[in-house]
Image 1 (cartoon, rainbow, N blue to C red):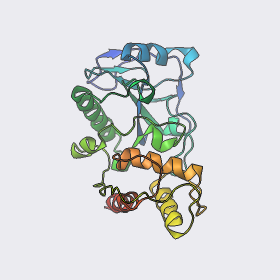
Image 2: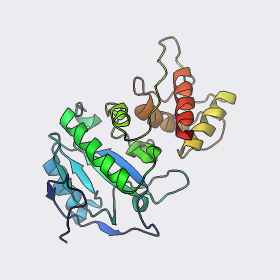
Image 3: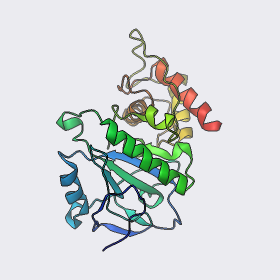
Image 4: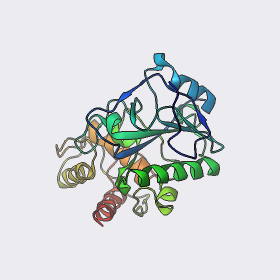
Length: 252
């Protein structure tokens, strides 16, 4: 299947096999950022384009900033998998997926290059402006699939995106060495309030009042995105304050 690039920033097109019409959705409203978890962008593109991979994405951004498109934006790519955000479970139909070349946590997890970040920002801004996406619609794969996915991870510079006008950000509260926070099995008002606030922002979380494994996974996803200095899934005061600030920013 040949198609024309949706963005003038695209340098190459590699049509993917795994694509289909969006289900009951006129236009995408979410932008989901991933890392490839592979050794090179060329290998990632080759795999993401194959039918046997059972995955695909709209764009791949190489370390040097080159952008490849694999699926037209009008179609549904298979990048999010089992996921949830604000009541929606068919994230693939409601989103555009960008894979960012990085071998990932299992293979050294290097920093994202400046050229790569610039390209992600430029492409992301163009997409969000074209579809009038809200700032809080720019999400990590880990946000919509906590625990199952951890990409693009704590090294991804979300603050740089927000400073460039892409995505929502709130100043993280400093991490205190003497505040280990609440861990697995903790319960009570603090845990219940944090669960309610995380659910209010969009995360899929059970409002049990107990810091169970599901809550720990969501806390790690939140921390990796918005409080990356310490990603441990514990409910410390820094996480609570950062979450409060994020909710305040989302209401503006």
